Length: 190
Image (cartoon, rainbow, N blue to C red; front, side):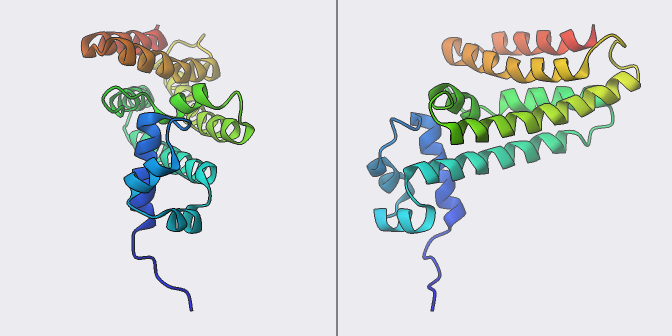
């Protein structure tokens, strides 16, 4: 008969995610995970698999939560207001001194690990799709100029996230981040 886990797997997955987010994949050792998750190695391997499998689960969990948060922003009346909410939420979701886990992972691993690249790319395409749909609606409603390309704008907004997070990590200047965010959002209205 199967035993129930003596711990909440989702809660421990979040602890692992936070460790990877803080240190990066390569700098996080199995001992870091044992200590941070407060589980022994056998429990980690039995529940999540090896370090790579655990990291993939952390990324998937992070991506699902981020997409859920962004889709909730779509419940705002105006499509442009929804885009603005998504952008501002994405920027404000950062932790002190930490950029988006997906952005961080794309720079650390995506060029060397096809599975991770596919996971990060899938998440990017999902968010770009949400943004593009909103921008297409905004164009139809006259909220943005008729000559704007919603697909290109959606990809521009998504790519702007990583630039803003880089600036935040480098300068840790909230006023600068707010100004850059405003500038990016103003660019879709002109």
